[in-house]
Length: 375
View 1 (spheres, rainbow, N blue to C red):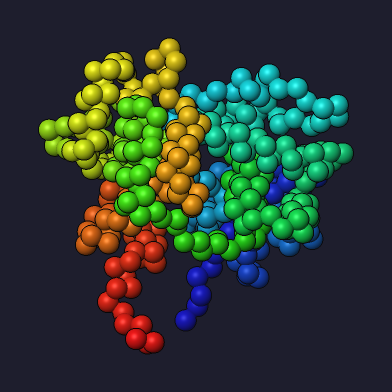
View 2 (cartoon, one colour):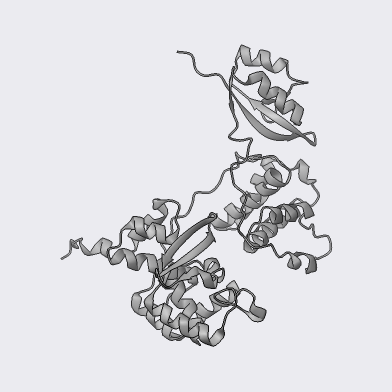
């Protein structure tokens, strides 16, 4: 039985020019078709044939091979959707900052593309920070001349400094964004190796500690913030984006719009939290967002974190507590009380049940039925 003939397309940069790489197993038919393409050349560096990357050349290539040879586009076309629900990116910090002499700033088109794709403000800052770190590592080298070996050398230098796997992945994402999104070469550095994901158990506090945390908030507004973070399993960004209309007291649900992955969902509204929310509304009179800062603007993420940390300190909780710890605790406590894992997945807005399954590793109900061999 004959194997299926195929070619794989790549985005490459050769001699300062964008080209289409064509990789295939030795085959006389494919070689004959490639000879009919405009000025095909061979790259010893990438071990593949290439032609100049233009719309006309790509069209001709597709017309030549379509229906005769299977064309693998996995490394040529992007598959990540554009985020459409994040707020407008605030880049004033980028323009205001004072840079040291000789510092190589992030290209303006990089920042523009982040704005157009509506990445969150926190993601923009992370990407800019890591990409500037990278381009200043190769300060004397033109960006178009950087290749896979340079990126690997940069990552190896960071590994020697014992940085985390998460740190390395963020650096790779920031670098790939420039070459693959800004320069329009999707999957340009597809072959760059990523570190294995670290498996870390979520930090969870007890129900008693959650109640102590709530009791040690400074005022009614702060109390409501902590209550909703825990009782709805909300991410910090989801909490500060809640509008007054998202609280459905008749159905006892909270509507979460445009959360991680551009997904909408409903989560639980606590009767206890609702009573405090009504008192909070009468006292603070928010206009649009459920929790507002100065000038009726959206409450800041930093303020939410500070509220949780200060309350945890007052409650004398030994573990480090953050808004996400409250979300982890919400999921774990539900699992311990017998709620189905699939229902918890829906409440948290997880795209995969595998993400939710991590709570089985920390729920006490997982271990209660197991008899200790010492006993």
